Amino acid sequence: MTLKRTHHCAQLTKADIGAAVRLSGWVDSIRDHGGILFVDLRDRKGVTQVKFDPRADADLGARAAHLRPESVASIAGRVVARPAGTVNAGMPTGEVEVDAAELEILNASETPPFPLDDAGGDKVNEDLRLTYRYLDLRRPRMRHNLAVRHRATKSIRDYFDAQDFIEVETPILFKSTPEGAREYLVPSRIHAGEFYALSQSPQQFKQILMVAGVERYFQIARCFRDEDLRADRQMEFTQVDVEASFVDREDIYALFEGMLKKLWKDVLGTDIPTPFPRMPYVEAMNRFGVDKPDMRFGFELMDFSEAFRASSFKVFQSAVASGGAVKALNAKGLADLTQGELKALEEVAKSVGARGLAFIKVEAGEWKSPIVKFFSDAEKAALTASLGIAEGEGLRDPRQDKARGRGASAEARQARDQGRRLEVPLGRRFPPHELRRAGEALRRDAPPVHGAGARGRGPPRFQPQGGPRAALRRRPEWDGARGRLDPDPPARPPEKGV
Image 1: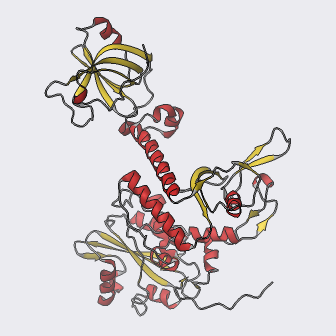
Image 2: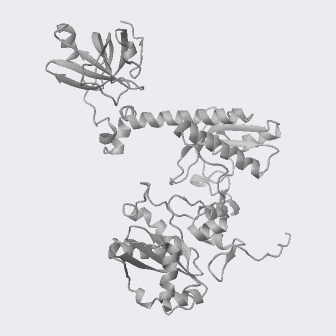
């Protein structure tokens, strides 16, 4: 029997009725209807229903009875129309089936250790899925992810090719270089006692290419960094690496906006408008407490310092008088938070710089909070107008300490512990608000300390001094008196040369 397929398992339609075909794939499911077996045969394209009738061929029916889910089989037969009432409109091949005439079991399967459908597979412990990774990758969602990655990579390559860029593959094994993270070291068998370092990025290579006159380079590059895991970084990852000569900032913006526009269209079929909205760093930090806010969520910090500057509520009034700030956000739909959860949020707020965290619940048109009795009508009106308060919502008022900075973003950090409660309409959890840019600037600008590499050896390492908030306070926009970034900072005198 030849193993060549005439069609894949999502290809047959009514136009193929009467044709002799051969299919190969995995047994997706088996159904016994009064002795007649119906087998769904699956490959990476889709599923086709195959019928084994023991009345027409007893030997074939007996061999088909030995099929098990996930067995690999090759089947030959003739395409026939499904009987009336059995058409499956949800399948591309739902109007036809294959009346089997030949069967070869290429590989009999044991019972899989977990369900291979998405609903069942998602409930399985990840360790078990990784143990049987070859089975996990058969799940529809995993196959879809692989296909999406392929289409995304192809779209990126097509785009940069159309922009006259040249893809250059750079070495993975390189010498150790003083970059931001620790490196993975690979011992050399030929040169005893010497080590290669896995490339953290193609930074030096692409600079060589620019000096060499390549002018426009790109690469879908594999990078390796020996650092702690975080939400958007792991030890081994892939990045779109680009370098160009004779360009300015606007050229780079337009280049990558065009890439993302094409990528979304090719992969998701979605048109995204360009150019992208832009927001100054100071505005982003003051409104959202993070330098890359997700504008879909709308949890915006509103500054009510002026509204409460002369308030009879001494806690707010004294915070503003001492140079701090009073900010609030509207936590829509979270008026049902328990006292324990509110207390936990307050502790997190204090841990990141706020003096405290007050709350107001709006239920049945009534404001419920221990502090409401201290508010004037004008203060209530300011909160209502600015926050768009509605039924079932909760307000949070973090009081910032001028010496501790951006405590108002504390609630975003609480998402790590309160993720199940802070669900957002898009089905994603509230994103953690991190002062990433300050931390990255701190790491970049810190002085090198020799001999501080992994395991006490290696190139110079950069030792941060004081943490991200200390770096933030060193920024020229930092207003120490008010404990926040100033959108219009005074000019600093030029530093003396060393």
